[in-house]
Image (cartoon, rainbow, N blue to C red; front, top):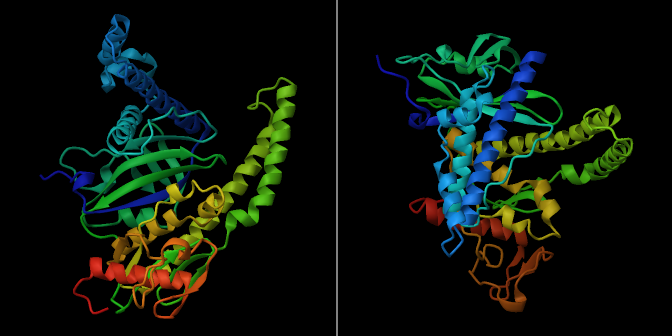
Length: 424
């Protein structure tokens, strides 16, 4: 019998996030696995950070050479880690949580070594949120998603390694996944508690058949220019509002944070641990819920706008912007973070993949400074500043609204790059 394909062999992959309601015992197991995963990650960070620093010593030094030799001799296999740290043999600790912590660290270290501009991996601090990553495993020769180590037991309970049966709440997505007849499997599974004390599982699901049907062609496409005044302006001149969720909640959040700070100072003055300070913990929870509300409202709005855009267009092109680099400008960092360009564009990209649309990024150079009618480019002192919202081309005399002109240039560039034979 043929075995089920691995996740990297599945052509279609989606994610599913589901609320769970663990018992007190299961909560303790989640906390224990979070601690074990964080411990291993931090031990590997400490080892390689020291090796990296010692490797930069140019002259031979016997103590340095001996230390390097010792650090390199430390094993990083699962058996070596369990031998070095016996508490990992605890039956409640998922060995896959330890393995995934090692794999995640290795990926972070490889990015540091190979990707320019990537910082060295840092220690994971203990916080109020908790998480660890495990995997769904299947028996040899199995092709049925229902027989994995992570599976639905009934409409209200899901089986998770080490936790056993956990009550969950689902909108019907998980039931739909487990009812599929095509070859489908669950890959990695993240068990997490957020800062508000709610528990979730995030599952990677792969299949040989698409999860969504392609949408019919509409015969039209756009370029979009994201900005902080509006969420985006498209090449047809349409604009999507920027609700500014954080900006509108900023005063309320700041007030809650000041109150939290006062309660922290009071607890410290009385010599009490913050974990035992009930008033501090109540206020911390209120503050966390305000922040989570902002994040959820923003995510919901971006999901609605991206879905609406993908449904109405055959192709969507956008600039290849680096939000991280742009947020180094302290004057606009808050507003760029609030509008969440990167998240919005990511949503458009994966929804285009779901529904058979074309998505592309074009170079950002001169999309704002170039007239889409005659191709004239503003240079020197005539270049537009951030506050210039409209301009008139000095060559052909065409009046431009800044964002609309930029969106048209993005569409034209995208058409040349991705649709060279198109008549659009």
